Image (cartoon, rainbow, N blue to C red; front, side, top):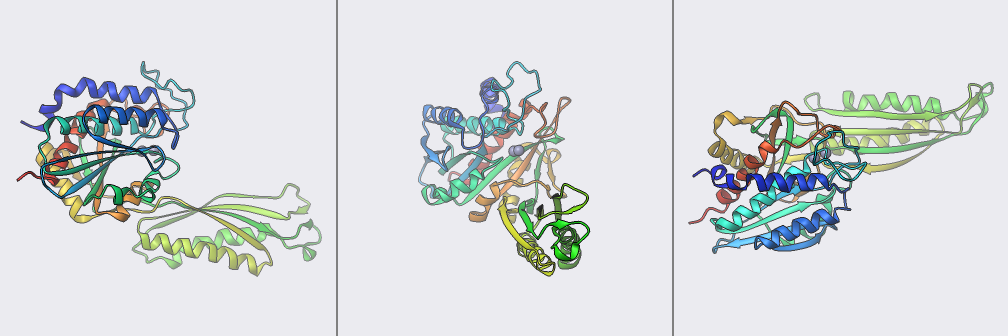
Length: 388
Ligand SMILES: [Zn+2]
Ligand SMILES: [Zn+2]
């Protein structure tokens, strides 16, 4: 019998789990109720549970047979500071917070996976389920890794999944290599010497220096990158001055940089401060730069992606499996786990008539994909830890 058919009895329970999480959103690293809820469900179903991994993260572990292989599957469970506008009966009970990215659905799918695997126990080895905090803001994946995730819960591969409201419902998408871009930020303060607009010779003008910096930064992608590679450098903030007859003392800029390979990300990270500093210097301006390192590029392992795709082909058939043709320009902190372990991040289509984009106040996770997603995780774990 197909796993989806075996699990159909859990359908209502899965929806109830998901809606319970939806009603009770919590921000990154404040997921106390969510993590307690996850931990108690796992314990109830016979999983050994470790809490407080990466602050509010929870790990469930279940071993069966004598196999030495282990798989890690991750779901994120934090919400966003967005006012929900769905008018659903199970809408957020906390004003100003909502599950607008479907992490409630990701967690419900992994919980259903836990219940079914514990009931059937038809795998040979160890399954670790990583319920991760703070995907949206503080890099909960990094916190879990730094808290010894893979030393304490060793696994041979890790997998994760995101729902995608713009991809057909129930369709699985896979991609070798980069799936999500990185995001690095720089806050820059330029300090010169202010004075009267009529006597520029006795000032050091941070606006002219800033303008030159903005233009020089445009040359990074056009002149420093291999033309076959891609990157984005955006100056999102340029603030200076308050009076037309005065040269200000300071100017501030923010720079946002994105890339699709670790190499390009590293190049931009090195060149952006270099260009800012040297440009500023040429105007006699002092540049203070604060780096805000965002999530790294998410790079899928080819063999693990092929494996994950094969499981989907076996489970849902050729019509519902696609190769994604391009990377997403957003970023995703599962990249930290993929820096340590081979694995793959995949997407599951969630489009229906009510679909809104991720992070939209009208967004709601599509419950019709819960069963598909959970059955897929069960099949993936079973295939990875094949008995006999
Ligand atoms: Zn999100
Ligand atoms: Zn998300």
